[in-house]
Picture 1 (cartoon, chains in turn purple, orange):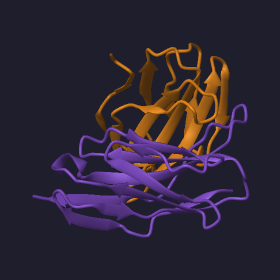
Picture 2 (tube, helix red, strand yellow; picture 1 turned 30 degrees about the vertical axis):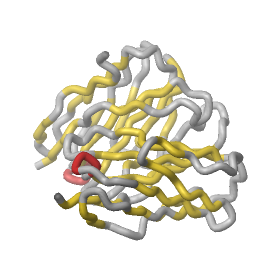
Picture 3 (tube, chains in turn purple, red; picture 1 turned 135 degrees about the vertical axis):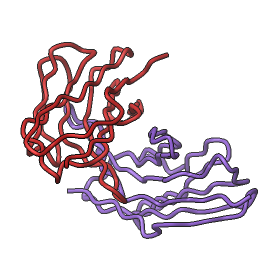
Length: 117
Length: 114
């Protein structure tokens, strides 16, 4: 079974600064996907970024980037030039590589991020 | 674009009552999921479906039932509500193909059992 650990329950940062959220995971799989989801107060779960484990290049999406360390089983999210709208819960999630009928996400417990004006 | 629609948004039940949480998606996705999110925790998978007529248990299925008679709809049934089922419930859908397409989530249903 896979486990996902987010060791930072809460973080805060000044607007326009850079912040890094940590995530580690445990799996015996070699091919898998990792995700960061954002959950603002509206409760909607929004996909922020996705990383495929067989790709060495770190994924980036505008101000969001990841540091994927496969050997260390680490998957951190960096938010640059943070904005007030980034205030939300952030969840790290794991999915095994394609296996019919097995498209299941395993979530961490989340990090509550507050951007301070 | 509607995406994934969940109803109701809020509900209070008494212990022992039953109810159905509705979920419908208009993206023609094969895969659908039900999660629950307890306070301060991540989402845990209750049931999922890979297509009409096919359902399977997730991590925490006890106390719940599902059906998938159409591609669009995936209702979640609570037969005998218990306080431990107080949670926020999320429905999600995806096209499938192993993580290359993201899961799309509904806005959630906040359910309280008193």
